[in-house]
Image (cartoon, rainbow, N blue to C red):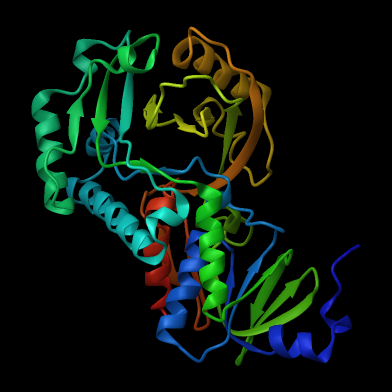
Length: 379
């Protein structure tokens, strides 16, 4: 049965959900929920409506690997070779502050936040010249302390393979403050808080296009026309359908194993400059990445899997992560991130009534709530 069109609804339904709304937010993810919640703080009596195309949130907020990360050493080293130093530390500061803001909106225990640390894994064929030096680790710690107030966040861990049973890994760089979350529990907690704040959420509503007149925004959707005074677009990579010049979609493919007896692995792990990543969850290993094997093919808003990327994930799992055990793959999925030429997100008004908060660059858990707050302040 297809959703009823708006013109077939009752008076009560139209009055409650489809009167001209003060603020409409497209996207029920971290950015969209945060935007709506901060709008409620700023406008206690306003009508606020969130529209989501899926029966569950469709974007990266519900498909991600659940990493609460803000800056791995190899990423920071690579960025410092190509990006002005102040921009690198501004990005880390936004991620760190964004995580603290997330924790202030939703208590950590609501989404099983665990601060088990993270490791950058270095392959055994890496040359000595390519390894991070002690003075660089000290430099990272000095600058990160200025942002976080915490000392000695970063260190080298040469025993990571002995600890977790890896193969082909010679050393690693550890970040003791990074953590992991339960993605679905976070989305559930956001939804519950949003409803408690008298913010309406409608799922299964796809916005085909929108236009602005002198008084309102008119949204053409799969259930009919919806009107609002202001519009916030918070669909990250999926916003490329509206603004291809501002944000590019980036599909990420993921797999998860069956439960593994006596799983020693605990924490979050980055490999090959973060293009591969894995973690423990419910005695399973969640592993994703491989987009670097086919950037063009993975620049898509289509959910799906490809054989060669899934094969690369399996090879990494069986040859490096669990060389002494071959767990079965129980499930596979994909999610759509939003990327661009810069790591900085786009938070801007594009007209007198429309604003966008997109291009999270794969760091939506860390920066999404901060983006939502800044976005809410544009009107």
